[in-house]
Length: 479
Image 1: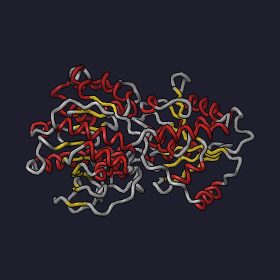
Image 2 (image 1 turned 180 degrees about the horizontal axis):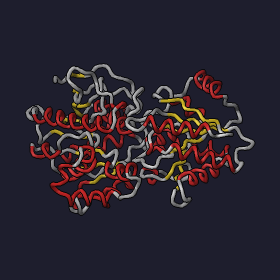
Image 3 (image 1 turned 45 degrees about the horizontal axis):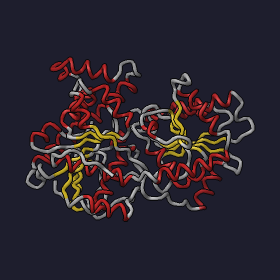
Image 4 (image 1 turned 45 degrees about the vertical axis):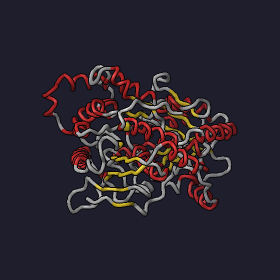
């Protein structure tokens, strides 16, 4: 497939500022990068693919607009991810359009991952003269859809992988309900050795792809220190000697989008107030995520039900906005279950506005008083950071990303401490909602802290890691 310069793209949040573009240009001479991510190229204003896809699109945009990097992006989506990017679409069936990732079942997704792996590997290996391994950075935006990293290393490339999800940990926690730890499952898979070759392809995508990412990545980038620690405990000394794992692992939190949140149109806010019957005394909670089991929305609904039964909302008008669309694979069934539970609420009014694109979010953020992240498995927490950037304090179930958040205006509650996720959220809600006026001050503090964590800084750090890996040099000390 021919490589073509992109000239028209969807508008995405997180554009780097002029100062960020300048610093990126000064930090890096004009270099070549191949950025590989199956989720690239999908219009995120209407496609619920999650945080990893949004990070990928904004990385491509930041690098291309920075002016110091020639980016060739390999994705499966129908459109170029950003202006200035050379984009190639792979992974589709012959004669068909872009793969419908949102509609895939587990098996369909596994077949797509293998197709994208083969095509992206072949594409790069056939172009080593254009992208010399000794001078080209290769960045892989996730693990399951990654190219054959071993083949790329044999050809001389030194790829780095971005760990949006620790797939082995996710599989054990969400599919096996925590009955087996990731460390135990990885140990069993490793002991099986050659016998693991006959395992179903879905299991290979979980364990073998992660194993190869650890062995053949030149760097592994984790968005939170807790996620890196989990991967270290499960894999170091089993797949790779602990010292080698430590030498490869990097923690780079994504931060918040550089661009300040847009002021919503007054008419848009008024329309939402009329639609949801929100008055001056109403208390509005908001959550925003894909609707899938790991996002834990049912725990938020159960927490609100607990508070109702305790009489906490007897004299209050409480509204909860559950924003987001069903995720691929198990999303539709999960969304039906959550909606059914929400209909049983008696005092709290629950609404499901659906997927919010960048143009929709500002008005919803303006309506809300508190953002709630009930996820039971979250690598970082982009939506919560975006809400804080817009001036909302946040309450979260403790997860990998929340452990790196600042205290006070972004509180994380532990399910273990409160004997269950719903009880933990109920305790956090009762405390934070006890001072409605104080929430506004917490929101101002949240906005200031999030603005001090610009996404462009993370993009610069990833680029430096990628090029130092390509050059075979130790990672630089970032300032």
